[in-house]
Figure 1 (cartoon, rainbow, N blue to C red):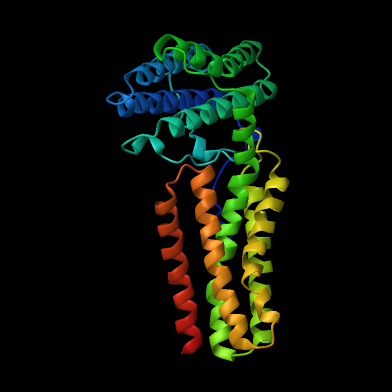
Figure 2: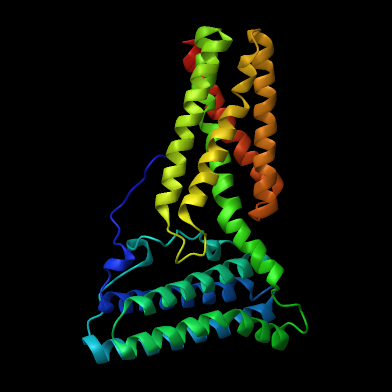
Length: 326
């Protein structure tokens, strides 16, 4: 199970106005570089879409220039290094821009998530600062980010000859994935895989259904509590649009517990051999379900997702068998 992987981070509410502007400059530079990497990766197969991201990168450069000009006016030449990973509330982005070949829809989806997160940051920052000129610029940039999807649609009309823009249904779908599917999938993967070792170690060591059931239940509930708190404390959702942290925590913790109990409940059957056979069958079903969800919602090819999940699950399962048989 993942547990509490904490690292030193500063709370957003503790940032000074100087640090907020420095962070905004860093975000705009990073986003612009990501869009240019998108353009480079898409240029050969999707030259029109590459132009869309080149134009978006230019907009990010203009945002950065305005932020730097205001920073120099207020605080001087030195700009401290404040990165997104140093601030609590931001989530780690999958480095999709390093992938080759780039998947067109995956790139557009991540770009939309970047715009939403940056817009949330500017709105929250504007409420936090007291300087009128800083607040005005942050509100202007928040409105610009809010319009960025519409800007991308206009660019698509210009470069993509009539492809449909992003609809409200697609936006709702993306938020559903961020707020429920991602934490639920993380919990299901942890519960289904991490509890295999203690469960089957207990099964092999005791040969007793009830004792195995107790170990599996304890592992499932413990993993659910740990994963629930880890998810709830990882991101308050204000910047990322991932929803209320405690709702995500309940989803993640509940799916973790469910994933572990799925192959634990068969040990309520007194016959140990029947219980173990059924538990192994349920494990295979769980791994298939995880692979399907990853393929359906996370843009992972089904065979690739199945291979990764099955290999990981088999190694954990094997470790439990070997330890329990020692």
